[in-house]
Length: 459
Image (cartoon, rainbow, N blue to C red; front, side):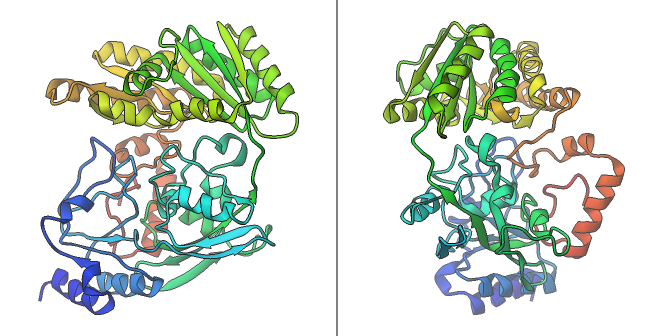
């Protein structure tokens, strides 16, 4: 019996027949995530556990027989983190979707990892509570994936990223052992922060089967401010001033290519002559005065026009336009999405240099993102099926990473390293850090079965 057959037999004992899939016609559905330009191999099976105990049984067998395991949620990732590798077993937690507990007295929820972000937000809203992290993909990304990549979102400029919301985790380790990390209290410093270590580890250290997430009160309807700029650099320069004086709950940026793509895909009256839009929101008492102050900063920074909306429908349309950028660019051609972050004072310089990369390699790059965090998503769009343009796009992609590093930034703000940016990670962290990463990986996964080849510069 081969190692794969032995693991498959263990899975068939632990799981129901319908939750073990080897049909070659179905396997490609779970072969890769939403990223482009990232390699994907051939799995021998996909399993769909429904409980922590089933995940434990699967990993114990995989560990015993040294079979690689690729954890997967909704597959909405954008860095190849859940792409299959040859001879791997995909462990997909999409059927682990139960909300286990809403503790409104202590302000947290415990949930299985397969539930979508929006579904969880709607569930806790019934108790008058709010889960803050809201990736643009919130309608189709899972909480487990959010934890694995430390996902951000449009509101993270005020409310933080996923790590800031995680109080505790239930995790199945590589050898099948089950542990609970973290706490239920607001404060706690007992032991190393193993919970924080797991968040953003991209399934390389364990599989999350429960997340205990911090909740808060539902914010008031926001006041929305839009600044229309003729030049993307002017918009970038306005951001530092805004963030030094105000605390918006959202501050998003769209350049002309992003605006035009959305308007072409789903017309809504956006100004396609604008060089850039800044979209800000405030959801606290005093929003009206904050909105006025943001408008004034935009005008002083060169905005052609600013306007304020307190109408919830109009506000949702404007924010919806920002959330539509990726699907709009997907519809326009082959696309390759980048994810970098730089200090806010370097936003303007970085965006200008990204435009220079586009011109140098004769590709279209649409830049949008979370301006308040300095987190940009330059997305390269090329004609479908144009291999020569695709090659130029890959070169441009790598140069954007170099631009971010040269401006004191990072090669990934929220999407993770996955398989797409392993070489770039080696440019960002030094040899000592690489050694520490390797030692942590070896301590928790000595047989290297959990998502091998992902997230780490070496291993």
